[in-house]
Image 1 (cartoon, helix red, strand yellow):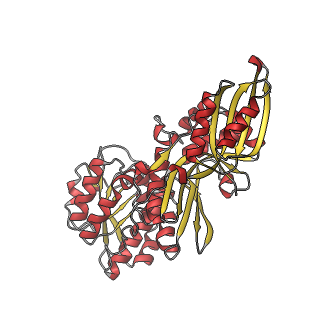
Image 2 (cartoon, one colour; image 1 turned 45 degrees about the vertical axis):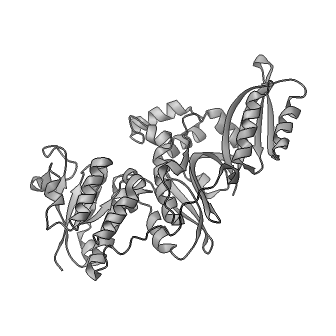
Image 3 (cartoon, helix red, strand yellow; image 1 turned 90 degrees about the vertical axis):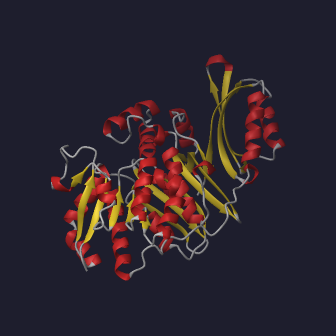
Length: 429
């Protein structure tokens, strides 16, 4: 079999990792696919820029057409990021009969269905393992390893930046702002960290996971999103007292024919497997009706882990080429989208409130919860010296989101309540 020619779109952190793996693992790749694998062209913004990896300058180009319309290029690997222009590049590549491997979670979350449809029409593969979880083979695990199972729940830590920040806040008692600044200095957080810390990055990954896991087309707008920028040291301290660890959790749950998906800071009981996932590591916990509980764990980002997932997809494309089954692996969603109403979403909740330190206040609060059929699992009541205020920390039993939001509104309206300080979802093992 002739050598397989690759066109690489992008030569940043992940692109550099892809070049290194293809170059350094050539013997292993030859053994896996039975032919040489070569990078023929690489799209870059500046062909004269100094690179951290040794590359023949003749294969660099700043014109995407040199890759998209080169009939000798078999596979296009996209690691440049971006959405609109990148989408156009990949559609062009697919229409030219080129197979595509991408690490672009933003693109796949927003336009994955359209791209997969084009790939199917033109008999091409489109693989995107590296778009979720870096080097963790979670998508292949869902599509292949758990193909015969019915997934009922996915929950995980799918953003390394926020996990790093929350780990430092938990272990060292430091403030959000202080740890964020350190994370930026160390390169774990971007100069503009909004996508990470406000939960959008995790939401895009959960869109992809929920669509695959439930075989139902989930849109980014279907994922309820809340970030970690308002999490305080006090919240984490009180959670610790009650035996909980704070994590930014992506959550997707199917009950019957209806699903829900969300991203939010969540208190996990300390014995939950996800509670021990530290620093920039990612993990996804999968519940299946047949398999029970499984967990995928590993580095969620970085040059070589992510590049490893990209090259694994490349190997899958080449193996399909050898047996002539390209374009046949994409499975369209089986079920029509049906989302849960808020009244059908149940959880336990952690709640911190500041109240006037006087007789009868707790009874008023209890009455509001009881009216909505919500009881308490745990209660802490602590005096605050200034302003004759008490702080009450509650963990509820299961409550519907509709009931809980009504309770919060009534607490805001209660004269004795000075402030609802914070509230978070609670998950016990």
